[in-house]
Length: 138
Image 1 (cartoon, rainbow, N blue to C red):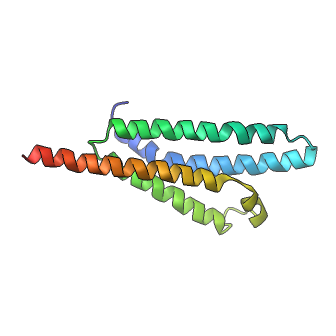
Image 2 (cartoon, helix red, strand yellow):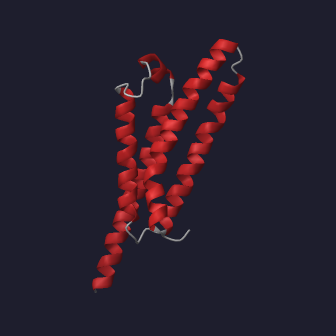
Image 3 (cartoon, helix red, strand yellow):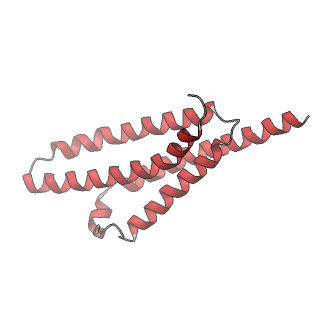
C-alpha cells in the first residue's frame, strides 16, 4: 500500500460515501421488507453490512498506519469532517428523507464507527509525522 495522492483523496471521500450508501440501502430495504412482508434481505443486510464497513475501516486505517510518516493525516481529517458534515445534512433532512426514516436507520452508528477509526488514525499519523520530522532535524 504505497503512498499516493489519489489514494489520499479516496481516503477522504470513502467514509462519506459509505455512510450515504449504507443509509440509503438500509432505508430502501426496510421499506421493501415492510411492503412484501419478507424481512430476510433487511435482516441479512443488518448482519453483513456493518461487518463490511468495519473491514473497510480496518483497511483504511492499515493504509494510514503504513504511511503514518507522510501527510496522510490531512486526508484522515478531511474524511472525518466530510462524514460529520454529511451526517448533519442528513439529520436536517436535506436529502428528502423523513425523520422517521432517518431514525429507523442505524447509519448514525456507522458514522460514529468511521469517525472513531478516522480520529484514531489521524492522531497516530499526526504524532508519527511530528516525531519523524523532529528526528530529521537532529
